[in-house]
Image (cartoon, rainbow, N blue to C red; front, side):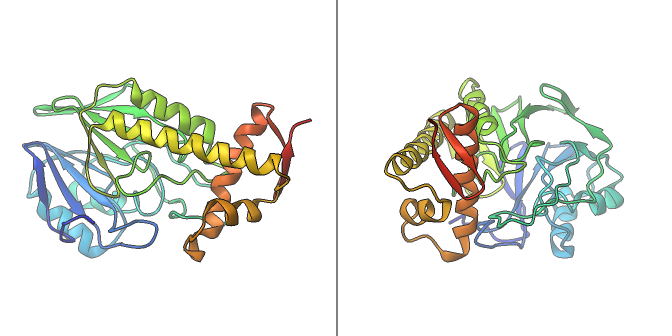
Length: 285
């Protein structure tokens, strides 16, 4: 559990401060973590939910300094809605991920999309935002969502990982927008980088990040292996798979676990290993 009070800026290093939003839940852990980057002018990463108390805390953390950019990793409602009111308060542009609105009535283990997100500038992989003494580079990491970006702070080796890599749980990959093949490719991409610390949107900071990512890759491969064993044994219904794969799961998360299994199945189907659709699947002939 993060030892961090809600609404108080905590310095993590000379260029990074963290402000925890008051939105804890079974899906957000202790809440969304907003990061204020810079010692002079600043960038704000993942401004979080549009909560008056959180906006007040961000204004206090900014402390009158110029805001160069308000940057969102993706557009789930626990990440981006505060961007617009923070822009109104500071005059800063919203720079970062592309807008994405998706009608999705299925069970989720994360927030739905922010339909009002309107960036002034969309970053592509490798593009940068600069301030006094800092440079933030966009690192495209689709998978959790198709528009997900991480942000690398070049001066200190930090990577702000949003929901792509979290410090408390594996991320949700929920079709139709969540894509398991893209998610695994994005994890492989991080393995090839030399970042020294991850600052996720949920959960504690992550040291030895390549080792951590290797564990996430292994976890997903383990889940894939479980699915294939169940299919070979004749279990082809997603609800039955979830019951066997997630023993002791909080019943509130059963639907979301099913979405994760579906994401694996869609990936396996694209690779010609399984066939089926909806709730029923089988090994390919």
